[in-house]
Length: 376
Image (cartoon, rainbow, N blue to C red; front, side, top):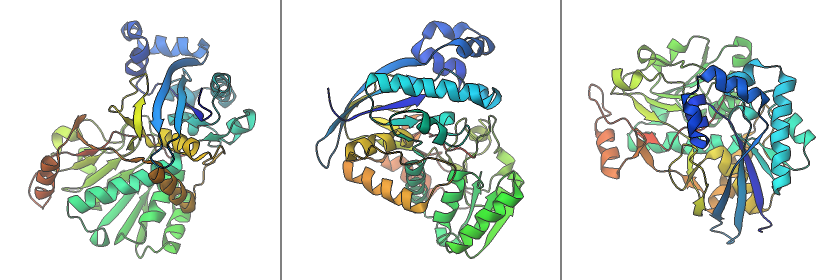
């Protein structure tokens, strides 16, 4: 057994779809019944992960997926004490399996205090993975803007969910480059704090707004909320806009793909994993890829940094830069381009770029598959 071991907690987002990936027979049950059963279900061993290998030092990892059975809706609606108990039980299963560090996936990193209480209850370090998620989001946005010939210095950029831990850091990191920032969220007072931080980071023009429709002014949109329903609709989007939807469930309504062929979608957050990784389970990403929050956990293990790296509701740009450097050293990088869950060739992406000029339609492009970046 390798000395470098990790575990990652997953849980259902789309209840029937995600549960049936492990238990196909349950796809025939109604969602309400699956959720009812999950309240009484203990944490679950899902699969063993092997084949992760560092490009820098050759170290290999082994790990495990463990599942907290609660859906996103239940995590937000059940008493916090009950939800914490379920997540901590999942962490203790990871400890028994031999993990030396634990990653919190999706809403397990959102409820409560952003993993701090969970880390205190366990004997192994815990990370939410949000720092590397921000790093990969920045790479994805800049990558798409470059290929679609959108000059950030002349663009209006909107961050939806800007008062959340990840949205606020995205705003700060984009502040020196964007011509104008529009910060969108539910709490005007919290938005003003983020606006001030963005100005300190170099933003020349910052506006705040509690109405999602304000993103229509933006050529680039990063959406990072914890909403259970879509918040961005066809009428909200600027012609030819680049939309980086990094929330799960998705912030962009499904109908947008049909109504707005001019809009470029970046489903940010999928990372190519070094080595010949076998996750032993189809969790929704392409073969050889992982979500950025998972990749942060793996990168820390390959680095031998068994510590609680990203916890709490406030992220620092220095954390983002540090994990980005660590991950790159070991061989993690932005995942391939995808269009409607299929890999997109370079020529197809170039065709999308050519069509990005005003008045023309272009291919809908995705960089990877969506990760969990959530407003809190």
